[in-house]
Each structure stands twice: as structure tokens, then as C-alpha cells.
Amino acid sequence: MSMPDAMPLPGVEEELKQPKEIEDAEKYSFMATVTKAPKKQIQFADDMQEFTKFPTKTGRRSLSRSISQSSTDSYSSAASYTDSSDDEVSPREKQQTNSKGSSNFCVKNIKQAEFGRREIEIAEQDMSALISLRKRAQGEKPLAGAKIVGCTHITAQTAVLIETLCALGAQCRWSACNIYSTQNEVAAALAEAGVAVFAWKGESEDDFWWCIDRCVNMDGWQANMILDDGGDLTHWVYKKYPNVFKKIRGIVEESVTGVHRLYQLSKAGKLCVPAMNVNDSVTKQKFDNLYCCRESILDGLKRTTDVMFGGKQVVVCGYGEVGKGCCAALKALGAIVYITEIDPICALQACMDGFRVVKLNEVIRQVDVVITCTGNKNVVTREHLDRMKNSCIVCNMGHSNTEIDVTSLRTPELTWERVRSQVDHVIWPDGKRVVLLAEGRLLNLSCSTVPTFVLSITATTQALALIELYNAPEGRYKQDVYLLPKKMDEYVASLHLPSFDAHLTELTDDQAKYLGLNKNGPFKPNYYRY
Image (cartoon, rainbow, N blue to C red; front, side, top):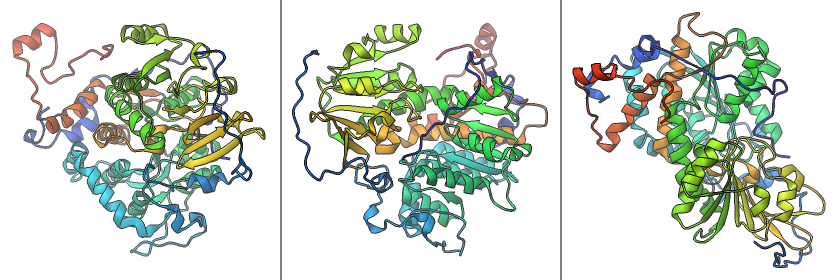
């Protein structure tokens, strides 16, 4: 059984409180660190649907097929370019060492390090802002003494972040937050460079938790910072090693799922360290969630299904930033897009953008594609799956695999057929097939890649958040969840403007006085919604 990307925590169900936003960001350590460089370097349906009959073939691969085996299949459409045919032995059973003689890692194949290094170098070319931050701050080593344990997607882009943290003085141990998104060659390159990385594409549930445990539990090494994506690492530490939090200075979390967990802990009085909510920063919401998904949704769908979208009927569950990005891309290619929403404000936005807001039950028989991006659980149930038309494509663009009830499909009367990497046909007794992508996990990072430039924005924000929490004097942050200051968002944005040869207009003294602003920002109040 594949591991759930998100494990719900027991506890509080009441309304979550609003996060606190840091005020007067100029005095904080992260701004002091990154702004010391010379200014010249940066300018600031039919109910009687007839199904095409596909008789079940004798000897077809069934549900009993090893998930761990099929999970490691890889084709050109997958996020990792590694072909699993060269070695089916579990990495946990191998004895591997890098060129320096270290075996403090567990990856698919350390021999792929050279190829992974080229992948990282390509990513660096489109992450100039993060590289600029690395060059500015590495002289002072603002993370000297930091021992960061991380659980994120392990791709060429996150490798640039990890190596930036190391260049700023940190020691890092890393695992993957998704069993399908790891690029094996990149993990090998990190291991060769001396990073203690424990991850490979196609991990089992047991492998997933084993890798996290290896990162946290090491004799003579104890983390004092956490960088998480989804909250599984934070959950594991709370569950297995609560004493670790005695030395943890802070948590940086970037996903909707992980932030929700932090608020649950805070509301229950169980959050014992400060936490930074990167997910709700403007640069993450508007760029990673919106613009990244606007491009990567099509990439993931086309690599896995070769589908043509013109005239297709698509229902997108959720019209938050991720949903908005998906819908814009689908609409541009001529798809007929429906929206489901629980929030009247988001629903009204969808209507004003030209989409029809419906209940899923109203269109489930007629749509060709179902995409979830709510961050919730059981959005698409077995009842919905039973009513879908033949060849309906079902996928998830949220971090967690809880949105589609995949567990309900693992029953004796249904046959699973793996047709290509991360693409399963789930076949009903009457021959109907539903095309399930990535077993309900995050589509874009499981089945394709995401734009490097957008990830540079998020990675830069994460790096600055770690610098701030690590260097903050005692008492600045309490045991609560904080939003990053708007000044930090503006700084991250300004670092990326040179890539477009963009030139900001500067306020005159009179204009700044009229608006009541500092000429150097922040330029919007905390309540402003971009």
C-alpha cells in the first residue's frame, strides 16, 4: 500500500485562528543579513451514458501487482529520467558510498550523480535570485551552526535551495515529502556533494517513514531547524521524538496541508516552537500556487495521457489560487470548465471569470476530466467514481492524496492496469475504465516537472524565513504561527525583477508623504489582497 501523503492529526476541529503577521520587518535579522551587499547588485451528459465495452482479458495484471514495483517504473513522461530496469533492488538493501567514502545517505544509485549535477546546474541558470542571495550572504554564514532537517520534493530546483542553505553555513539532512516526485539522479548528486539525503522515486509507505526517521534519528546530530512541505516531518518528530523540540528554534512550512496542521497544533496548545507560514506569503500564493499550476497542470496531463483539451468538459474542484491557475490554462486551450466551491467569494470569482459553478454530482456523468485542488479529504468519492463515464481522467493538484478516495478502488471487483508511469486504468466489471493519475497524488511533481523560475521565488522565501527564525533573538517569536512580513515578500519579488529587465518607478518624497509610505516600502498594508 502506498503511503498517504497527509496523515490527519487528531484534535481540534474548530475554526482555525488567523496567523500573526510580523511588523516592522526592517529590524529583523534576515533583512540585516541580505541587505548588506552593495545596492548596485539589486534594484529593489446524459443519464443513460453508454459505456464502450472492454472485455476483461485473462491474465491481466490485477490489484495484487506490487505497488512498490510499479511505482518505480519510469518513462520519459516522469519527473525522474531514471529507468528502473537497471536495478530493482531496494536502496535500503544496497551498500553505497560516494567518492569521499561516505555512506551517510540512501538513494537509488549513487552512480547517477554526474547526470544529477548537470540537472542542478541547469536549474541554477533560472534561479538567479537564489544564487544571488547565496553569494551575498555566504561570507557571513548566517546559518552557521544551523542543523536543518528537511522534508520536501527532491528535484533539481530544491537541490539548489539545499545547497544554498549549506553554502550559508547549515548542515542538512533531507527526505522526500512525496513518494513519486524524487528525481533519483538529483538525490545522487546531493549525496555525492555530502548532503545526507534519504529518498528515491517509488518509495513504499514503510520506506517513506524510514527515510524521515533516518534524517531525524542520528547519533551525535540533532536538528535545530525544520523545513517541511506537508507536515509529515513535523508530525513524525512530535510522534516519535518530542524531545527534539527542546532544541528546535523554528519550523518553516510551505504547503496548505502542513500549515493547517500547524494551526491545529497551535489551537490545541501543542505547538512548542515558533513556525513560519510560507504558504500564505504573497510570493508563494500568487506565483507558486497560481502561475506555476497554470503551466504545470497541462504539462502533467499531456505527458501522461496525450489528451487534447479542445472541447473537453473538465470539472475543477476548488477555485483557490491553484484552481484559478488550472482553470485559466484549461480555458485557454478550449476546454469547457466547471467549478465546484464551498466558499461563496471564490464561487463568485469563478462566475465573474466566466465559469459555471456546479455541484460535482450534477456533472460527474458527463465530464472528461476531474481535477481536485481543495486541500480537503474525500472530495471525489467511490460514488462519484462509479458514475463517471468511460475513460474519464481523474487527478489531484493538491499536496495531499486524501482528496480522491483511492482506497475505495482497491477492491476485488475492480482491476488495476498500469499502462505507463503513474497512469493506472481502473477497470469496472462492465469494462468501463477510469484513468487515475499518480494514484491521486500531486500531479505536476509526480508526473512531470514544474517551472524552475517560480520555484526560485518560493525557495528564496524559504531560505529567508530560515535565516530569520534561526537568528531571531530569544523572545521575538512565541510558540505560534507567523506570516512573513510584507517587506520580505517585496524583497523576494525585487530579486527576481532583473530577469525581466524590469525597472521600478520610485516615489518622490512628496508622493511618499501623500500616501503615508516609506519610499523603500512596504508599499501595501498588511490587509491588502493582491
